[in-house]
Length: 392
Image 1: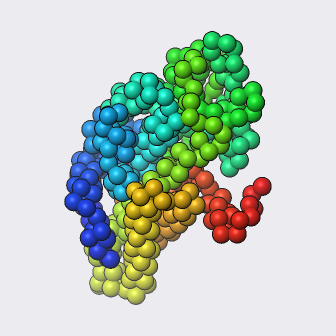
Image 2 (image 1 turned 180 degrees about the vertical axis):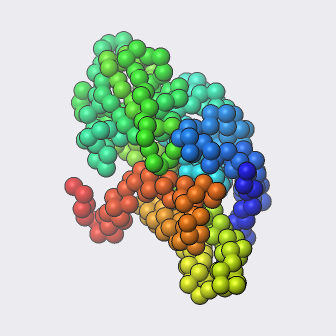
């Protein structure tokens, strides 16, 4: 079993920008990852299964809804703390961070922001404790980057709603107890519904044969005349703004999370380059290896400053969707490039399960696509600076 020797890079002393609470959150999360995730992650990735036994520990460290107020069972942390937790979890594995992101930003967040008080009291404490796990139903077989075209619909049947449709590429779906589902009503308005496992006509078939996010449980959501109680409608969500606001929270966490994967790959490559000897000396002494390592660290440092700034703005309620979009796009692309360079440093060893490099690389191929593709995020920035939509 490989020992987790990770030491995070901090070339610009970004730690000095963090509060003592931020550092405590980071250290606690990192210690948990080293103890509970690192020793098992390569095995479960090879087996393509989510380690269900870690859910209790994730809840205990506050990884489910870190920003949810204490009155609803959450830790009540700020958004930089949330980001730091995502960084540390994805340093362990993108699939583990995805489980936390979905629960926090795509299930708890919409209930907190758009739900009734009774919905908040009913669901949030149990979601925070891990007693309930959730998923988020937006993407459909025919509608990915264009969620407004969704075909899932519900109709008013007097004492309940009747829901029909399908969602796919849904993280946590195979084991989720509830799903926050976005569907159109009879007027064509997008609304949010809380669908519970056990409702007749609701099923969650698992998606198999993935090369990426192998430690994340992925599935579909199938609705065949599902009767949803009227009290399960999120009363404050109306239109596409509802799900997109949730995606902003998730994208923000991803921007931090991808940084964690890049840090892990860089740290692995640096240690390997110092230990691996060729031509009678460590490969770290060769110019091309130093070039790779120096460029990796440069990009990581820029990304650290980017998420710290957007986190500060989010704490102040000033971070825009476009700013979050830029951070997600930049940091995931950066991480993928860093991991690819790290694989080169390790040579053939980089493709084996003895090191995390190839696992991170495969995971990031999903991360660069979900919660808004790399290209769509570029066009979001383009729209923000020109005022002209290129994707409609």
